[in-house]
Image 1 (cartoon, one colour):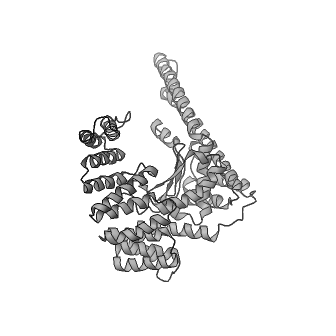
Image 2 (cartoon, rainbow, N blue to C red):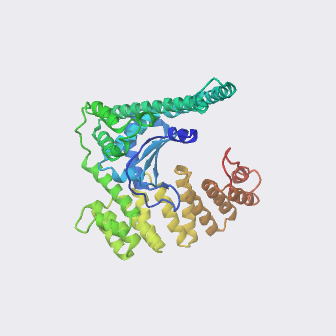
Image 3 (cartoon, rainbow, N blue to C red):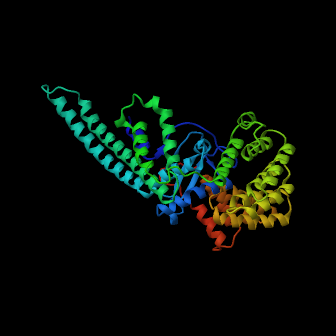
Length: 456
């Protein structure tokens, strides 16, 4: 295996296996999914685990990736990445909580920083091994009496180093499993979901791993891992504890929402047939109706959802989103405003409401949109679309300087540094020299790409 592939393999601590979908407010072509409801559900799952791990003050976020594979991983100490496929495939809250507990184990154990240290040491060892191997090749070439394979003198030590690194990562996975069980016990949650998930993944990839060398795998072999996990997971006093019905319903609504936004209308209809009158099924069908069918029918279905749960902010959000995307911005304002009032973390919904206000083409509405977007950006400072909407709102007001600055900030967050610098330079000419806005524009003009990164 090439050294580059080995390093890539070792830099993520991940679960790997099956397949599933991704969601609504994911900008086209981008890998991440942003949704107020789903993020709130995951926040509820992770907060107790993070408190048990002593990480509650670290502001660790769960980032949803628009990918259908069952996967979760960490790449730094601030974020847990989880694929939409893992959310859709998890049958119970406890299953995905077990996955999140495992990933929290990697963060709490400092595995990433230690792995980087191991990689740095391995690179040093690899260089030494290569030099020694090259010396051996020269000696072999000079001596007609020495036989053997000169290339093996280089490849042998490198292979040993690679296997050592992989063994190190396997031990980290086992430690994360144990830490995950510890956090679940501390929060009085069942370890069964974690075990069931690994067992299911083990069964799915069992055939593929039958002929693999266990010493060149970055994760423990499935059967071994599940057997080890089963022993200490079943010792938990909370093994048979079930998720509450309310928690299960929120989980099922989340899965239905993802399904409705990710799949074709006919696929949703097969998965949630008309005979299924459960709230999650009706949710998925309403989403599919507005996306693929008749907006009038969809609004009727969404209104029925609102009647069933009047205080569910995300049903009101869905109605507003459907109306806005259906070209009825003025009608979208009221349900989105109601959703903002009801939601516990409404920043993303505020951005959608601001978009509806701007689309009404009213100056007074643009004023409100600016205030709302400024509020949302205090909590969500890395959402490019919020700055796009802010630029449009300032444009409606005739404030071209702030419009240019907001457009420059949007370009910067998209990674388009060339456009960010151009718009920032134009904004600078419209602000008083030395003013706070001028300083922000100047920062954008002088921004430099990260070392090794390609600038547009």
